[in-house]
Length: 222
Image 1: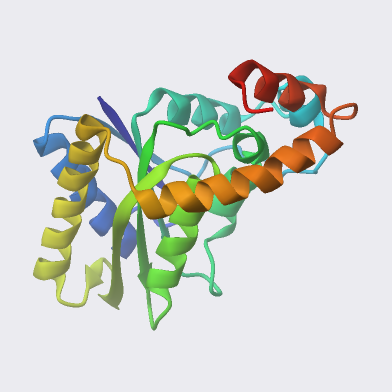
Image 2: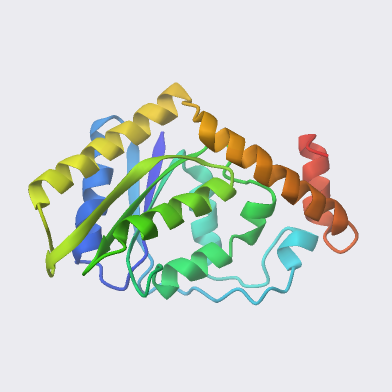
């Protein structure tokens, strides 16, 4: 079992990594093989909405994003971690999300489980964590929860001992969910509703986006 942690901030030694490391520590203690990938310093091109992924199944950019996509597809569990920057995630994390548009249109994370970590200097950390979880859900994954905390300084969070313990528990729960093939009825209902809207789009775009149409047909979703 593999759990991949993606650190979506330029600061590799700050508050966010403190919580991410705790989640990965819990996952590893529960028996998972874990890997952490910081986005800082990677070659991440911005999506230009060319539509190539929908029509041909591959991206026009050959950069580190493609390597990250492969790592995510190999993982059973994905943990996204980012601070609250202007009520959302930093540009590095958003660039990765945008480059995974095909994952949304074809639900490539189906069968995977996710969790999210977020920190903030003032507020909004829970909203940012839920945003990352929602992104994983529209890619087809099920999410087990969040770890969110406010900063108390550089590399320090408020109520640190308790928050780190909660993050460790989240990592353990992520592994348990993967092992149990846990189902979340509320998430399944939301996905079914979203899938119907996406089906209509896929059928409408059939001629311009044959790859995603063929994928849906192969999966028996049409």
